[in-house]
Every structure is written in C-alpha cells, then in structure tokens.
Length: 387
Image (cartoon, rainbow, N blue to C red; front, side, top):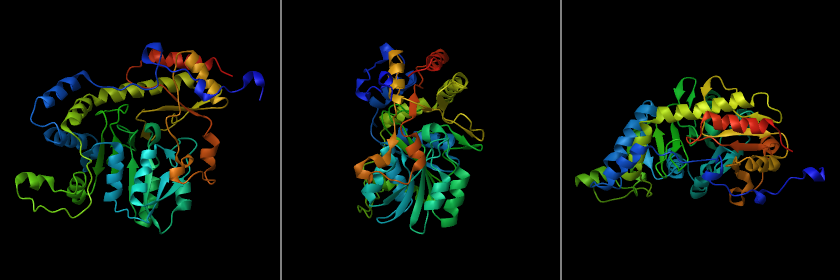
C-alpha cells in the first residue's frame, strides 16, 4: 500500500454528537407518546395491562394478517419465544444467517440448539438461498432469515425449501417493519415473525419486541411462557389452579412501553414514508458514483423498510469513514458476521461471500431527524471521492 494512503486506525475516528453534524442514528418518539405515557403513569396499570393488549391488537391488524401478536420486553425475548414455539429442542440444528445482530443467534445458546451459519447473498446481504439448500438435512429443524436493513429475503424460495423438509421459517424482522414481499406484509408470510422496538428502530418502546404467530393454537402457550409459565388471565379471574407445568420467562411488555408503541403505530405511515423517501434520495444521489454501490437498490418485487442504508465501498473503508467524519457525517458497520465471536463457535471457512464483503460494507445515516437535503449533501461528499 502507498504509505501516503495508509489506512488510519478505526480508533482514531472522532466521537460525534448531534450538534456537530449528521449522526448515524437518532431515536424517533412522537410528541403524542409523551401524553400517552403520562396517562399510563397516572393510571392503575403501569405493568402489563390494557395498553399492551391494545398494542397487540392494533399491531396485528396492521401487519399480521390472520396472526396474533404477542408483545414482549425486547426483540431478543421475541426471538427466544419464537424458537420455543417452533418446537426447537436441545440437539436440534437450525440454519441462520451469519450476518446479523448476535440477538438472532444467542438464544440458541440458551437452548442447546446447534447453529449452522449460512452465507450471504452479496447483492442484498440477506441469507443466501442456495447455501441454505446445500446445507439443509434431516437434522435441520428450522430456517431463520433476517431481512437485513429492511429489505425482505427471498421468501418464496426459503418456504419452498422449508416445505420439502416440513420445518418452519422464522423471520427476524427487526429491521423490516413496514416492508412487503410480493404484496404481502412482512408479518403475515411465515409461521413466526419477530419485530424489535429497540431505541433506534422504526417504532421504539424504549426497548421491546413483538412476535406474530400465525397458528392460533399457540397463542395461549406464548402468553404463558412470557409470564413465568403462568396462565395469567385465569389467575386474574381467580380460577387459576395454582400450578406451573412449563418453563416460562419474565418477557412481558409494560403498559408504559405499549403507550409509546401505540403512539408510534398511529403515525407509522408518515415515518415509514419519510425513511423510504430518504432511501430513494440515496439511490438517486449515488447512482453511477465511483467506488461505491448501494445495497438493496434494485429490488422490484418487494418494498424496502429503509431501516439501514448500507453500501459497499471498493477501497479503504476506514479512510472513507474518516473522510465522512471530517465532513461531519457519521458512519459505521452496525452488525458484524456472527462467526467472529468465540461464543458462537469462531470463524468459519465456508462463507466466501461474507469473506468478500467483510471489509467493504458501510452504513450511512438514515433516520427521522434527516431531510432530503442532508442526503444530497452526503451523496455530494461521497462523489467527491476519498483515498
């Protein structure tokens, strides 16, 4: 490498705050959420109560088709609950994407489930369908997919594989609230779909999650497991038999969180449209730009939920990040390949697509505090080039 263009170390990136430029993320909390939370704080219920039930009902109506929504305390809770409901047992194998938040994989460690990481599709960074087909066998008990950045995976192909082996598809839709695939909402396609309401997601409840379950017969079990294994509705009626027959967890959502969720849900069309318009501005601004390729820009049979704007840079990613910071623009990686972590088994050698992009992907700012002029500025800065 030319010593004049040596990559600078990551730890030299300056710390950035909102007043200094365009930050990578910013929470979005509607003004009405403050009023709704105040009402809850002045009411009888601040734990799991009527607001949670209302949030579940409205969420199902908006995203779930005929499914039932179960609200929980985090997206990770929602994933673990999904895996339990799917019948996964110790010793089972699952196929899951290598490129995702560790929350997708960590619950399998609780359960003693064997993780088999699938490679990525280099065009989308989603799970690679062909690799799934190559890996699957009679020991595989579920396929987990992640809609990276908000772009839906190839659901028809994944369901075709799952049908051959009579196993469920579990969707980690933490990034994909509001996305659609061939005219269907993400949330009404698979047996289990999980959403996250962590601080910087489309909808935030401070932290929280939701599972949409299409099999109605699993609803009561899901409600028991999220509350210590107790049949809470019958307990409150005074007819509970005072017994617990299955392992449960403290995974419930509170009415305080649900009040925030309801306020955000009721203005969701506006916030989703705004994020998608920013993504479209990135598509226009970076089209044909040298040295950078936007991920997810070419999809035409699915709608992008625009949680992340991710690009591949051809050279010197760290220099690229320094260059953006000098122009008051924050960037980052956000997620990393899960096989880099010792707890998840360490580095695999059968993931060539992940290997090829590992040093090149970058996430650019996209959030509700931004406008189209911010995106145009970022695109103009990028098109000036870096070294």
